[in-house]
Length: 238
Image (cartoon, rainbow, N blue to C red; front, side, top):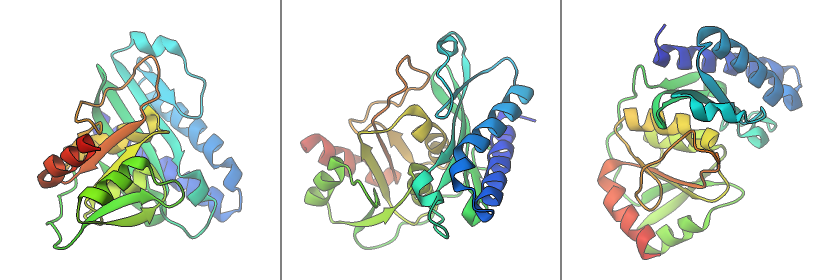
């Protein structure tokens, strides 16, 4: 099984577990049990690789590895705990030398796994205002700057993975975020988005790097390629 297929398979298994737990009313167990499953599956399949997970202590030995799996066992815990919301996700990615090389984002409530082994086909552009995916509870400051400078409208939704995949699926055009994220929030979404042909970067246009000593990675931009110039210029002007 190659890395792309492995990422998709384990993300799907974690998603199925989370659906079962949610149905049985055990929402608080989601993060823990999904993390245990992902660690067990990845360790068995790739025993020579390192793992960085949101739900596990950070083993700094990962910095000596070229290949590091970066996972978020449950992205969007709040949304997961509010059935029947579907804007939560499972992230599984492999960074090789700091660059996302394979990844999968499961959207379990939609029974969907988007992954780099079979990159999604980018939807055609939609006429009208630029649609910005934004947190339904904590919109970042960069979104205000984009609203001031672009013909845009907000589309609120939950997890980072759900927002990124909304761009991939053509439901929105731009996902820009500043502040409050870590490598596990964006590595898998960035891998899938890049494989689909979207623009991916930090909000200043610089590359996204992973398996850094400090996993805090506060900002990112995922958007349709034809909008990247305008969005980056608007962010730089701010």
